[in-house]
Length: 214
Image 1 (tube, rainbow, N blue to C red):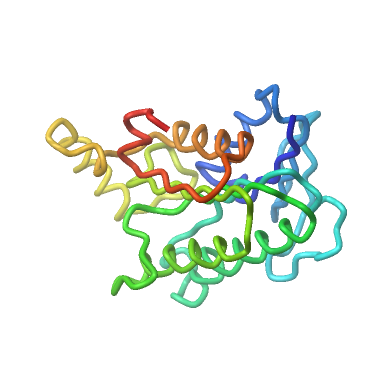
Image 2: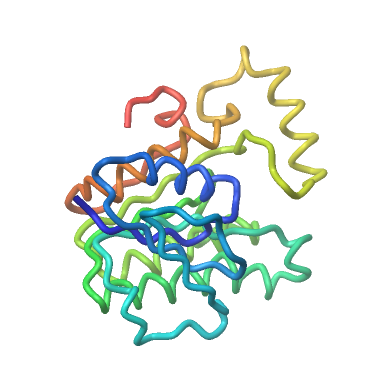
């Protein structure tokens, strides 16, 4: 049985993690800090927070495991600096505070191509946050690196929409690592990694998610 912290619960993947966790018999309590209120559920504790000023001494930090699906786009964030705050600084702060309060497992939704030495800003930030969270020292740390995420978003992302259409057309010819990955499947992998808490550090690639071999 586990108490799960979920950050990013209002997003596409995070919302799927939330639904699956609510139905998961091994998850007894879900702490989901968000900016806006979530629908109530018997398992759910939903502190409303400002991610710029997270309360370091809040009792709800005391959880067993964490799933982090925080993420945005540079277009939505408005600048590279703002993007980095959401995709790097917020997850790292959450990781540090959760670990300080005893969390033993952390599952991070990242992206294919994540590399702290990449010349591409997006990939570099994703790689940097992977390294930074790893250094926090969770006994169980899992990085999930999907390619393009499939699902109906509340927000419209033009570049992602075009890429999705093209990849769907070409999917029969593409290697698994380049195929669109359903958001529910990504959520299932993240939740399983957090709850089962396998010892050590693990990277789950997009083709492994598509194959269902995780």
